Length: 350
Image (cartoon, rainbow, N blue to C red; front, side, top):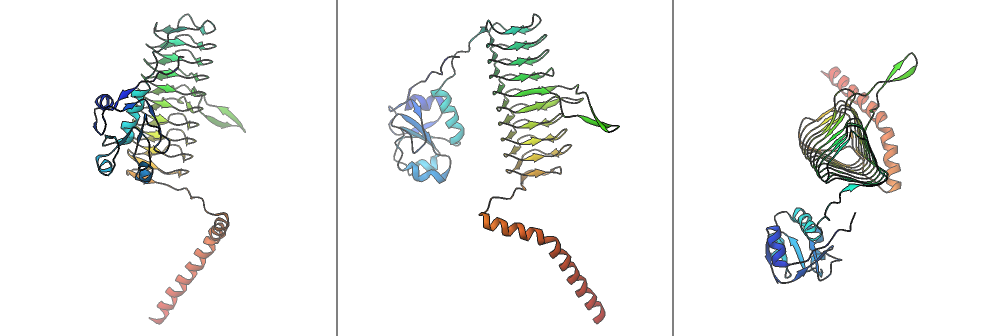
């Protein structure tokens, strides 16, 4: 694939492209991006977190995306935004547009005769496309991928290198799948039968909606009977495990190293922080935030923030806390005896 081209804008042109108001020298040239502390005189930067206000005072950036309130005390050039971080993302896209998508099938790719591949699609080297697979317009499949039989991939989707998609999975439009992802492998279904494990056949599939993104080395298992489902605009970080028959609601985001056990349903607009574990067969309602390293063992039916991880402490203090945690059961029994004794003494006096 060709290198991403870069564009350059004058401030007034960039403001018009983004639909934002601007302040300052509207002829200044903007061609790159940088942090407040690292930006140069032709770079744009942004201020979304007040903690970086001090860095704003020393920035060399050509323009900074910020709120109107923050801009009141800033002497430099500004793009005025109600949501600086989101508009910063759009600015990066303006300055770094994607290259024109390639098309064609590499000579080393193996494509089944019954596969349906749009003429505008691109199939990279050493990739396998199975029987009945269907790839839409402008789909890009990177090197070394396996797209198994009857898999469907929607228009404008991008599958990076060394991805395996099987289990008759269905991917929507504009889906991004990063390297090493496995979609549609068998779920972990086992039954104990006369002292030995018997594999339970997994006959469901995986359905992924439009505008989803799947991080590197993530695994999404096919359903046991019903499908595993990611609704539209679900964003999954690296090294996440999504077990069979899980359903994740639209616009939810899941950070790295999260594990979600089978048949759990997660609502819309949920955010699950890194290294959290969610047990199976649970229901998590819409608009729930789960903080890092939490263990979720019960369903959640009220929106809000939930957590169970213990933050790191200095090692000596942590050892003292562990000792006290080990004493809690003994303290509870002693307190119960004292309460019972007080209750008995009160009864005798009466």
